[in-house]
Image 1 (cartoon, helix red, strand yellow):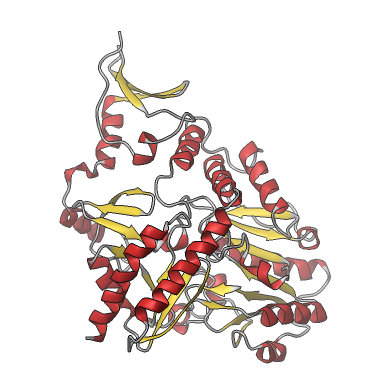
Image 2 (tube, helix red, strand yellow):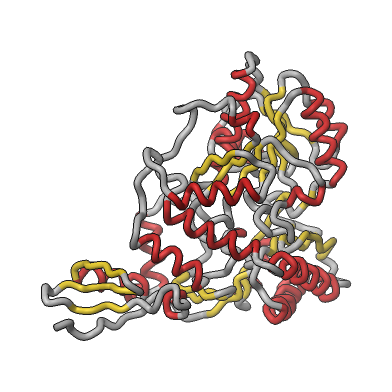
Length: 460
């Protein structure tokens, strides 16, 4: 006979999941193992293993200081982390190891479009992980095929290449651009990027990133990259020529300080690329997939690229990236030209399909636009007269507060102390606000006074 149910904390999304998946239960078996079950599936594992999973979820009883010390001792120190240990999330809220609650208006750097532990998303991930997790790209999987079909149906693209991050997507776009010209008998080597750009930290994408402090320690990075002035079409005209393989541009710069490309700039780049036979690449890693109130940020310009890179919100918190392209680009790519062991796996694709379902649902993008307007208008009203504030700008729910000095980090810290998470951008002079796309007006009304208070504290 089955033993008593094992008690323990489980992820919040499981507890509130609809009929798609009931709350998981953990039972003793006659063999002394644990059976984890939901719906009509079950997973067997040793008692020690399952109990260990539960204790990990519950933070294993370690203090914040213990966890930070363990991280400092064993993890390469490439991140300037704040001294907070996050252990749980639900919707637009996070809780740390000490039980403090935060309103999350940074979304894991524009990743958690549906917030944390969305029950339908969590159910899809759990069901798929209990069915098939990984087989590599040697085999076909239905989830990858369906996601690719959905992305091409909802974009300019004819083909999709899956990868794992935004930087990987941009690396793929670099390779595909060069191969496109190679297949035509041309050895074009040059790429054009712009001031304020951020395309990643790998050697190719880093070469396209404008901030010299990111590039200098690792030079020489990929040669042949030239930088024009963002939103200055004449600057681009002076650089694009018969040696240009591709032009990379973000329709709305996030890391660069929340700067939107003008319609004239994007349309002009398209014309210049057409004139010189160069490819146009839109990097929508941060601004794509509903963040600006349209599915793709470039839609407002009525311009289509040859390649578009996406990543951050696509799988709702799991690692995925993609390069979408026209058939003319795809025709130049052959077996073995590029690849990835993990890319487009069943779990991340199942998660991404769920995210797309939500973003494409009736009224979702209208909600993003509505909340974006409320946020921007509310910030403008609240911050009017603040000496440090130069401008509030943004599109949809990608919003920035431009400050007159490089004190965004201090504002971010002050907000954090008051229970609100935001992030800096630009040259340390922009407060970047990228909440989950599911936030409500009540959430916004809670956040705005905290931001105002933080700005006033910095002014003082």
